Image (cartoon, rainbow, N blue to C red; front, side, top):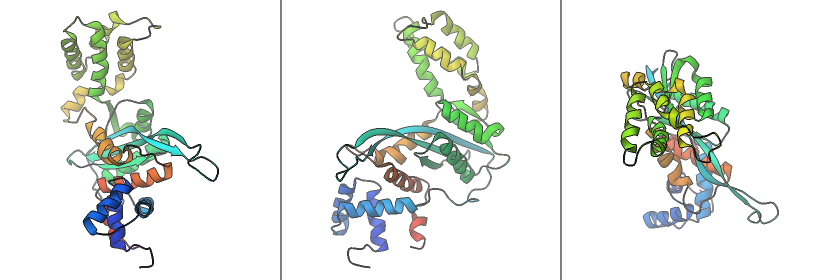
Length: 307
């Protein structure tokens, strides 16, 4: 200990609260539960210091090679700020949104997955995606079942990192949103739901051709300001190789990406999207490191390590 310093157990308490609440609220909770008055700035410093040092993934070899891995990637926006120049950085600061790229992988036989999160480029996110799947049990003979909304950068990274070792499947519920928008344009009043369900049933049986033929007569002109039918048609026709729902169901694999959507909430948004909260990018990544380590069960490992 030293003047104004924090013991290792106290650091753990401060980071524990700082990882879940705003630093001001964390100070209040430390006061309430431990009777210790700690400035929010001290909690901020300790939390970010440990966040930069915290490892989010287990060591290689932690998991045995899996027969099948479920793996997903998606993006989530967080509020970020760029400080202004001059003696008062608050003046002239720029506020904007940055995409956190979140990935997840789990053994088909396990309920709990491993997460990774980065503010870096799509290519760096792809490298992280592969690292996460390796930690989850990626082996030479592992089949990787990818899921997501079909964003081009996600599909590109899946193909680059897993190539012929797996297949990418469009999230069925995301596809259904396109069909629902088209149904409102095509079907008679009160019949949109039945039309949509009929097309969903066709997709589940890999009958994409029938779905496209149902859309074709109703395609809006190319210059139409609103074109939900044409949008659905293009979305499906351009992603034919990622619609094997019958094959996925036969192998008892999921067809929805709800796990990564849930991950956005409990890994990222519960802390990094608090009302009125804006982050420097370096600080946001430090907080992401903590949130990922906690989600991956590595919190205790960090604190058991040497100072």
